[in-house]
Image: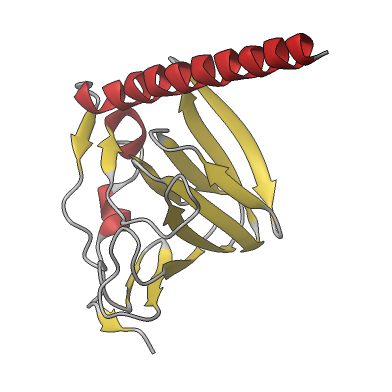
Length: 187
C-alpha cells in the first residue's frame, strides 16, 4: 500500500516537473514573436500612469487609475474605458501580460494570430475576453460598442501596460482614424 502511494507521488512529481519544463519552453517560444520583423515596440503610451482621456474618429478612450499616482507591475490598478463607433478598428498589437476586455454593450469581431494563422471570433455585450500574453490581436467594431480593458500578470495582479505593434494587423487601422483631439484630464 505504502509502495503504491509512493509510486503515485513520484508519478505526480514527474508530471508536474514535465509541465513546468514545458511551460518554460512554451513561454520562451511565445516570446520569440518579439524578434519577428513583423513586430515593433510601440511608443510609450500617452495615457500611462494617470487618469486621462482622448477622442479620435473612432470614439473615446478614457483611462481611470485608482490608488497610487503611477501604476507599476503590481501597483495601482487602472482600467481603460473605450467607446468605439461601428466600423472602426483598434489594437493591432500584443503584450507580455494578459489583456482582459469586458464588452459592456455592442459587438466586436476579434482576430488573433495563433501560430501562423488568424483565428476570428465574434463577441457581444456582457462577455469577457482574456487574451493570452504574447498574442497579436485586432478588434473590429460591428456596432457602437462600450468596453473596458486592463492587463494582468500570471497571478492575476494588475500589470504594467507595454505594447508591441503587430504590423499585419496595425497597418489595417487607418492613420486618419488615429488623429486625436486634445488630450483631456479624466473627469
